[in-house]
Amino acid sequence: MALLRPGIDATRHRRMQLWRERFIEFALRSSALFAVVGLLLIIVFVFREAAPVLFDRETQREASVPGFFATPLWQPVGDVPKYGIVPLLVGTFKVVVVAMVFATPLAVLAALFSSEFASPRVREAIKPVIEILAGIPSVVMGFFALMVLASWLQQWTGSTIRLNAVNAGIALGLGVIPTIYTVAEDALRAVPRSYREASLGLGATPWQTAWHVALPAASAGVGAAVLLGLARAVGETMIVLMASGNAAIISGDPFDSVRTLSASIAAELAEVVVGSPHYSVLFFLGALLFTITFIINVAAGVFVERLRKRLAGA
Amino acid sequence: MHRSRFLVYAAGLILAVSMVQCGGQARRVVTLKGSDTMVILGQRWAETYMAAHPGQIIQVTGGGSGTGIAALINGTTDICQSSRAMKADEQQQIAAKHGQPPFEQVVARDGLTIYVSEQCPVNEMTIEQVRDIYSGRVRDWKDLGGPAAPIIAYSRENNSGTYAYFKEHVLEGGDFAADVQTLPGTAAVVNAVTQDARGIGYGGDAYAKGVKMIALKRDPATPGVTPSEASIADGSYPLARPLYFYTRTTPTGDAKAFIDFCLSPEGQRVVLDVGYFPIP
Image 1: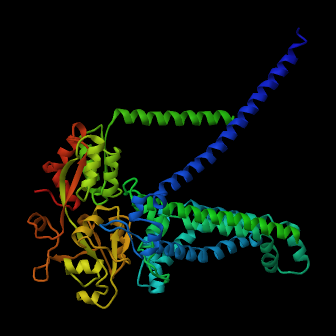
Image 2: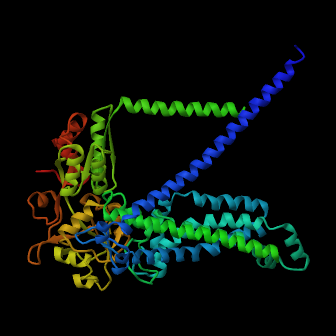
Image 3: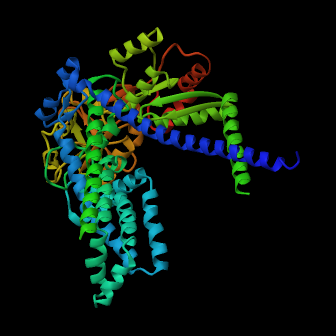
């Protein structure tokens, strides 16, 4: 009897372990499922609320897809509401272009510096500082752009309109830099040491090595970083709401005020009567925004995959 | 070691949360939500009232009159502060959902003020000139007697009661020009105008700090009038407007006591302190 006890204990112990394993697996699987289902429900909700624009006759009398392009005016509140989304598309495009032109070189060069040139101590200092930039609430960034940045820029450029696409774009760029920097830096650091050693061994300077060897080798990751930054810039709301002036106009001048898709949703959704045409239109804009960022993300995936294959083949 | 520390933290957190919840039950809360114009007024009322009535909590949040009215319809606020009268369809929604039309009380008056930068040489405008600026017919300060410089017009977002009032009473229902900039909140409009010598904005009188108030004329022949207690009481200021409280039903209990306080001489003194005008 006494001899058998250790065996029984071991079996019981193993069974307990098995149950624990099963429980942990179940918990992990359900949290993954929860995240996916939650996301799907949100998508379904957004598209369902936007559907009247496409399918409901009553709503279409006031707001329909051809109507979105028929008027250059966005004046959704009034006796005759006007839902022209062209100025919002133009505005979003302008701000995002400025933000990316500003942020991409800065973030990629900063990543190149900290991965290729900085000593470990300097790198340990730079990385957290740039990442703190990501922790600044976008309202704070927007307020800074509204009060301080706009005045500086107006003094420099002498622009007539104080709150304009350049002001909002630069503030937005500051918000996007950490995203691009972090991902690009990780990609650069993943380039094998042997590449650099080979390049330096052939007599290339450190700069030539960084620019002609490390950066091309990491180009898939750097490209993905830029596209992730782009997706964030398209969807970012508070910065542009506060810094862009929000005038819905169609113009190519970067020093004009702009109104973006995301800012329109943020500014107007709290007020609308649930189920009204204005409500459906705002959800339609949300669905549109979602589609744009979704396409960018898919493009990023495809782009990275292709580049990786090409590099592996070469 | 790590696990036990985690457990201590978790237990502490649960304890803290439950204490906050218990505290919430013991105290009596009245919520006010709505007009951004009225946030500072509501907050000052709440502070004064809470100082005299320990245990009573008055929570004040902004978001815009439309937001407050939506919250009243949805039952997420006790009192809605609004800088415009409720529309007929909103009243009907309350009646349909809660069995009777909302209770309305004018609690203060405001002079909707036109702000310009302190550097701006223009002091007076007619209502028609303001309308021309915001509808895009007048675009240069020289047409108003100032130096030749473009006018930069700032407006509020369309969830604001101030926006709705302005659109109805100044633009007479017409559209804003497309290039009028819209900012979230009167404070943002005032900030923008203080920073912009060519700017013009509008909003509640109480926010007019660091900007110049334009004296308004009903027509070119009459003298310009700035908002003041006298000019609003006698109706000579053209853009005087009432500020409202709305409740779903005739107020009772804590909400009634608070509203009575706001209407009392002491409450109306707060109105003057904040920069608005008492009801006659």
